[in-house]
Image (tube, rainbow, N blue to C red; front, side, top):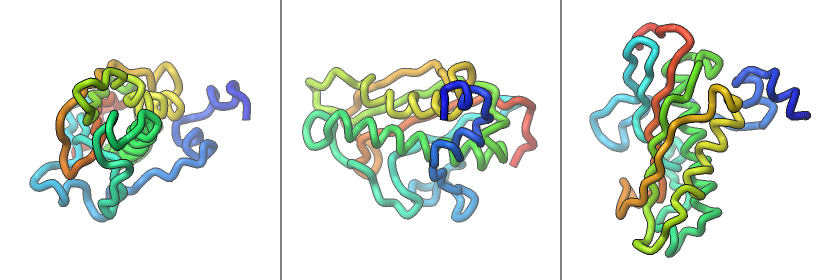
Length: 173
């Protein structure tokens, strides 16, 4: 498949062409593991998603730990990409289809690192690269920040908090 073919495809068509397995957050619903929270909030065309970590729907974590100690940059990149796949699942839950996204507004990425680790951006690129692959450079390139932190829920090495803009104001779900 050529780059031109990918450019002409919708986000949902790119997901299929890339062979991505996007998790379904309809059943069971998002949030039960971490307490009282909702998966997303809609205000007009803006959809703010809850934080996503690199965990399967049944709670199995991908590369838990601390980047720079027991998690490599490559493993952190893979964990960030995995978390972004879950973000795609939440977008589908909120909007019904990835094709309803007109922009990825913001991606705030947190990585658990050693104090000496400074290549946080290389890990966060795992998430932002996937967003560009799925949505293309016009819709998928986001404002973002990568922040090294000391701890995240359940020992995850990565978490992202994302805001998207919908093509039209979705019905509140």
